[in-house]
Image (cartoon, each protein chain N blue to C red):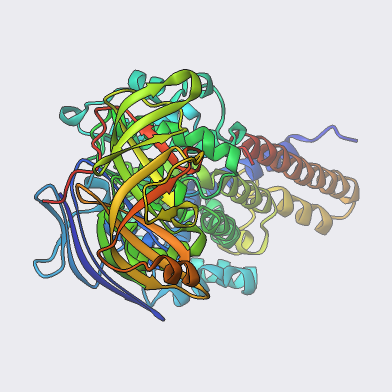
Length: 372
Length: 230
């Protein structure tokens, strides 16, 4: 468990953050730029000292201002991957990778050079000098360097922000591999929703120096604070489900969601594995009767639990689809009146198989477990 | 014309030796002072900065005189050095090296300080997260990244050290074979009737040495920058 409760004042800015995150797991700090994400990460790493508060990792107190505990950065064993990689320019790629490994206590070494080279595909880069690397390669080396320092926790401060879309795609799969293959807990800073969809097991929503809410992405995606940050186009429920059937040739998969099953057009799924799906509110159609004669492949039964007016003529409808899962749908005010939508009304949620965005995960992923 | 007399060769050898000894002595101290000036925030920084730069603005003769007053055999420091280490500075080659070191110290500190200020603190922070303590960080990250500046400071101070005159002649006098460096020999040649040819030879030699130093500095800097990948 990572427990953080800190206050840090700076000119014109105040951070008041409380965070509890299970370890191992990937916690995403999500929020607009300037909301204090990097400050919080720096406090966890020890590079920045809070004015007040505590940082505790798996029962180990790293910072406690009241008891004057402050474990120096170099003895925390917290890996940090910076936005700008920060490779040492006077050292080769190999020497960069070895820098942290050589300084880690022998008895805690669990991951070796060969394993890191294989995990991150670094073998071909070893002989190069750091300035001969592309942005994506630099971040992979920085990741490997942090991993080899045998960290208890890995902090990633927008490691993909400086990369263009193609380079991001080059690094993201490696981050997924690390999450699935190693049990190192990670705190991941991002303001890109798609990165969080792919990587995070938990999300902490930050705004103006405060953590508004923290939980699984499915829970957070339904909350108003999240909707405010992602904007109207990004509003939509995120659901996690088990894959029950796969048609690899057509890239189709069946995923259990709530009481029903969703057919989606997402590649890479495996029967028994998990899948995370985002259903954008604007892509969802509601029906008050069982639909017939439509090309839409999916109709999930549910009950309306909430109706919220949005800006303009839109209404956001929350529908409980059973087993604790819910989806969000956006309809117009006139549709709400004509259909007589109200809390408690049974409805059918229609989803086009191609409109579901999502990612498949191996069965062993430390996926979202219910909060305890 | 470039067949030098034994006395002139002596002067050349002495100039090189004194400049070398002066930079060897002042380098570690210059790195330390540059570090204090660039990184520490203690209130005496301004005074220290002024003190270090004083030789740049004082008449060199005054610097030599101050050294003489504070280090000759009648002064407390001079007696202590002689009694404990057998070191006698005034009128010796070592004394000339010390006077040279004091005069060229600001040049070296300046170059090293600039180099230190250009080192990305973010890299040091990264080294910290990778488990490197303060000294370890300094020697594995900061110092190697400062190398171009240190080399530049070293060569500048060395080249300037070859030509020190006022402070050297005042503190260490003009003893042939002991403290008579190129500029002192040049000065002596000018004073002597019929010394024009010798003076010209020594002047040309000084120019050649200076040029060589500058070219070497540039080549070294390029090489180091390539190593650092900039």
